[in-house]
Length: 214
Image (cartoon, rainbow, N blue to C red):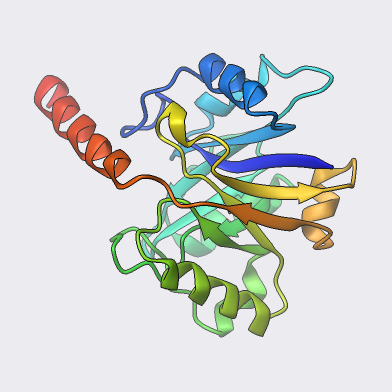
């Protein structure tokens, strides 16, 4: 059984703190089989983490892109996503043979959350059914309901910004080909909620960076 945390932020995110190499070290200590580094609007963190990949530990290059309608995650990327228009972002991810994930959908606590309509389901590959940073579990439950309604695979991730969060959520699979496992829905999800103090740390980090860098 292989375990992967599919939603982690490094210092290449404006609200991230961890060096990609440190993320890999922590993930290995937590007995994960791999991670996806999904920094905001860039694959730089994923590329750095990829250099630390080993025979027994896989790194997926990803990015969490803010579009005009909300955030979308691309997994298995090789190039930066340049557009910020939702339809164009989806096209760019598909053009790289990437996987389209809607992270923390319906989460009313986040201005960045995308609220996919029924018609939108045909454009995406999977739904994040558990995000550790959803303060209210009802939003994760709503994501699961949407995925079930539209027969979409469920994935999960910690949405980690700090080391204590890595491995809080993810997927489990017996398949060697992770991409195929996700697309064929040969996976199970697991997760626990992040401590609320991590949200406070994130807000503090954002304010500090705004003061320091403007």
